[in-house]
Structure formats: C-alpha cells, structure tokens
Amino acid sequence: MLDMVRIGCGSGFWGDTPEGARQLIRDGGIDYLILDYLAEVTMSILARAKKKNAALGYVPDFVDQIIRPYAKELAERRMKVIVNAGGVNARGCVDAVLAELARQGVDLKVAAILGDDVIDKKNRFIAGDVTEMFTGIKMPENILSANAYIGAFPIARALKDGADIVVTGRCVDSALGLGPLIHEFEWRETDLDLLSAGSLLGHVLECGPQVTGGFETDWEKTKDSWASIGFPIAECRRNGTFVVTKLPDTGGAVTVQGVSEQITYETGDPAAYILPDVVCDWRHVQVRQVGVDRVMVKGAVGRPATATHKVCATYEDGFRCIATLLVRGDSAVAKSKAIANAILQRTRTIFEREGFKDYDETSVECIGAEEAYGSLAKTQDTREVMLKIGVRHGRKEALEIFSREIYPASTGTVQGIGGVFGGRPKIQPVVRLFSFLLDKKEIALSILVDGKEAALDEQSCHQVEANAVCEHEDVGNYGVDGDGAAVRVIPLVSLAYARSGDKGDRSNIAVLARRPEYVPLLRRQLTQEKVKSYMSHLVRGEVTRYEWPGLDGFNFLMDEALGGGGVASLRYDPQGKSHAQILLDFPIQVPQHLICDGMAVAV
Image 1 (cartoon, rainbow, N blue to C red):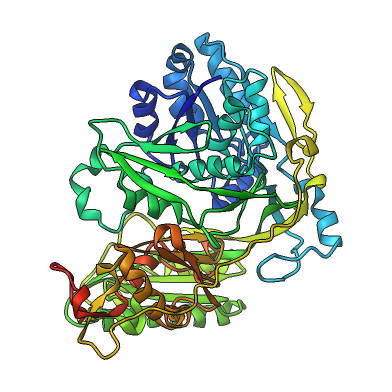
Image 2 (image 1 turned 90 degrees about the vertical axis):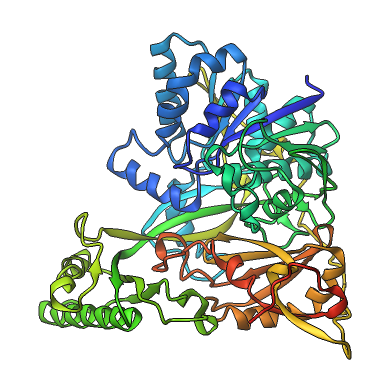
C-alpha cells in the first residue's frame, strides 16, 4: 500500500483533447489515470446509439485515443486507469478494450462495474407512479435510458481484485478519484470525513484543466499559456489532505483562486453535497498555496450516506432545430429580428396549410447585442450580430420545413447576410432529463473480470445508511457597507470571482470574495432576492443563497434557469456557462476606505 497516491485526470468530458492523457501518461509519474467522459446529456446520446446497434452505447474514444496508442506504456509504467467510458454498455466497452489489448499482445486485467443501468425496471417505475425529484411530474412511458449514480466502493473492490483498468457506467464523477484512495488507504464505510475528502479530490479533478487555469474569472493571468495547459494531478495522503498540482513546463496555473472556483462547480448546498458513499460538508474546506502550482486542500467533513441512489433517466420529447445567420450592417439587430419574424411567419403559414400544429417553443437571440443580459444590456447599437433561431416541434417533418426556409432569407430579406454554407440546419431529438430517487436495495451491482461476473453486496459497500441532517449556520444579514460614509459603485468582479455550472435545468453561481473583509459587504447587498431580480430574464424559478465560509463566499442555486437544460434547451448557452460572467457586473456600493487601486467603477 502507498503512503501517498498521485492521481491525474486526463479528460474532463467526452470530446476533451487527448493531449491531456498523453501528457499524464508520458510524463505525469502518476499511479492512477482517471478519465471522465459522461454527462447527463451524454447518456442519452449513448442510449440512442445502443438502440440502433446493440454493440454500441459506450465511449469509443477511450479505445481509439487511450488504449490503442498507450496500452504498452500503461503496462510498462504499471499505471492503473479508472474510466466511466462504459456509458450504457460497459460490457461492450470492456470487450472492445480487450480486443485491442489482444491485438497488441498487452496483458492487462480489465474490470467492468455493472448494475447502474435500471432501464429494465421502467415499467414498474411507471406503474408505481414515480415522480421527478425536482418538478414532481410523472414518469413518461417513452424512457430512453435510466442509470443510477453509483459510488466508489465497487471501483475499490475491482482494484482489490487486481484490475488494471476499471470501466464503469454512470458512477458519480468524483468516485473515479475516491475509488483508488479507498483501495490504497483501506478506508472504510465509516470513515466519513476521509470519504468526503476523497470525494472532494475527485470533484476537483474531474473537469480536467478547469482547475489548472482554464475557465477562471481572471483569465488574463493564464491566457498566453492555454495552448499547452497542464492537466491536474492530486497528491493525496492517508489523512485525506491533498495537494493539487500540474506538470512543470505546462501551461496554466494552480492557484487558490482556481481550486476554490472548481470546488464550487456544479454544487448546491455546500453543507449537503449528497453522494452515494457519503454526504459531504465542504463549508469549512481550507485552500492554501504551498508552492508554485501547488495548492493544499483540507477540512472536508462527511456525514452518513442516504439510503437511496439518484437515478438519471432520459426521454425524448419531440424535435428541435437551431439555425444561425450572420447579419452585418447598420441596424443589424432590427434586421435580424425582422428576418426571424419573416421565417417564423412563413413557416407557420406552411404548417397550417400542411396540417401541422404550431411550434411548441421558439427562441430568437441576437448574439452580439448582449441579449443574454436582458434589460442590463449596455448597447444594442451594433453593426454585426449572429442571429439564432431555435424551434421545437413534435413532428420532425414540420422542422424539415423550418430547416429549408432558413437560407432563402439571404435573397428574400436584407443585405448583409452571411454564414450560408455547410448545408441546412440539423434536426435533433429533444432529450429531457428525469431524475428520481431509488432505494439502494433495488440496485444489483456486480463486477465483471476475466469473463466472470461476481455480485456485489450493496450492504457491504454502504454499511452506514441514514438520512443526512445538516445544521446550517445562522449568519444573518449583518455587515457594514458604509452607511453614512462616502461610497462608490463598482462591479462585483472587483470584489469577487465567480464560477457557474449546471445540473439539469438548474444553474449555480458561486461568488467568492477576493478579500475576507468584503464578505459582509457582499452578504448584505448580494441577497438571493436581488440576484433573482438581476437574473430574472434567464431564471424562472427560485434562487437560494448558501453561505460558504471556508471559501469566503456564497453559492446561489437557481431553479428553472436553463430553458430546460442540455439538448432540451433552445438557448445558445444551455448549460449556464456565462451566468457567472453576467452576475459579475452586479453593482456593489463600496465604502471609500475599501476602494483599491485598479478597481473598476460601475457605469
């Protein structure tokens, strides 16, 4: 067993650059390589692929970009790989990996974690009146996929059984990092603080270079080195403390700001980040710079796991089509809106003639005119915009009419239209997310190694089961913001950095103060009511603010914020990647004595 484990993440999503894995395999000196390919949308894509061909349903890039070029090096370096490339067909993924290893004559033991796929139970779910955990709607009958988010103990078991490569389906992303730590340090189900710390490590790593200088508020600091950005490595010790770093001579930077931002990514209540193995309390996590490109993280707390797994199901709900056109010239915004109106009016006339109902939803955006800022837009007086028209309909044939009527606008409307190339806009199925909770006893997990499948006792993986009860600090709404003193109005970005993420139709924006003395100021002025009002053009649901004292900040969880989210959304930013950027313009009144050189003044 190791006293310190080095884990590197070579992929943050399906489609990430293979340069990350190459970098870590060749020069990383790591014990474990983890690769995260899955997202909620990805599962539906893989499910559709498997529906067409039973041999598909996994992420082929893992075989093509990792196993094929690096199998021999992985064996020579004794580097183990944990990957969720199994998608909805982990068996098929293992078969493809084994076939490639055999072709190269490389002897590695490959394991698959099975049982997360519960699509075979869908009829019982429908008959049992299962409802969506956020919206309360009943489960539709046309479920495409249904996968439980499983934890890290099955991964640890596969490693204990000698696996060199562990392939999972829909496990939680953080489990890819926690599994090796459970195995190497022999952590138990009752080691809740350690399980929380290991989960935090996995959470920080799983988006790749988002923690090494990518996706940061202060982008100028690393912009000149993005081309060679380093992928993250975590050095973890038995006590759960870990250091985030990267290879020397790679781009980006590992800083307190970057690590803190990533800790908050795609989270809700920091006191209750619910995972299959533990309920994490990360409110008082400490993040400290301990060297160049070295940041230590400690202070995670764990509480007993719940008795349920979250299940992510997907279903099809008609079709969508999104078209874009470049419009240049004076009054570009007005011209774009006139073009969109003409196209929608013409196609509606054709629909009526051909017997189709009206669109289920339409969305028009003039990208470049700050429409994502709503009434907060500084200007719409621009001579160049990208017109986006998104539509949704239950019949594919109706959207074929819409698709063919886009480019005729170049001859039948205004001058200055560009971007008419590459064929007609593509029609895609609308895939919606349906999340619900399922008793862990309903999930039959197993491990497939060397062609033999062995059942896993769920109780042996989760001996501690209880409802999570988290007490929240009553911090109040106090804080001095200069009542009676001279104040200036400056944008939030001068006082804080921020990061936004998504889960389904929810978006979160974490706002972290640049200095501790700014926290009372932000607490008083950046209330959930004011944030809801500021983001009201994008957010339909409630906004909840959570304190994050260890990181000197707050996390805002926004419901119904993404127009359905994922491929169900017609927005140009269906994952809320720009939400933090929008909020960072929020005006804050700052006492004169807190003003620093270089702070921007709000206009």
